[in-house]
Length: 134
Image (tube, rainbow, N blue to C red; front, side, top):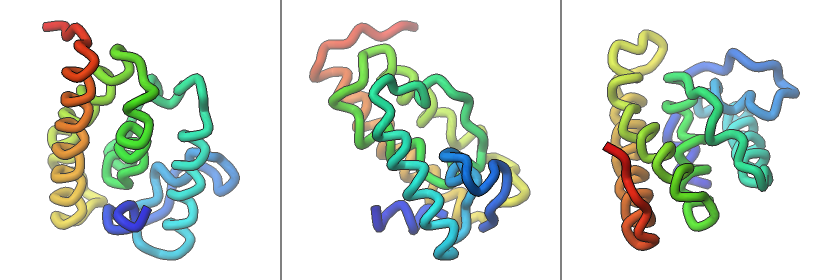
């Protein structure tokens, strides 16, 4: 989870008691780090993986929480969910392009991490012989 702290400037969006609050918390303040960790724990404890199909914002990509969840749960996700995760990871650079509330360093870190997660999800899909569309 230490890497999670590196991937992130401001807390906003969801209310503080919302388990998704960490998705919009992108600075390295202790409060945001805690929120991201709580959000990640909530996602990892969701056995139905409902979060996989929830839309992701540029802030969610920059926070790294969703990407960490995909990476952490790749062995348990269905082929369809792995494909959704890979598509999401591949879309990060486009979604962060021109994001006004993110620094160039945050964008760069998020893009690098997304590329890494995409490769891991692709490898998992190949290992399982998941069929790919398109």
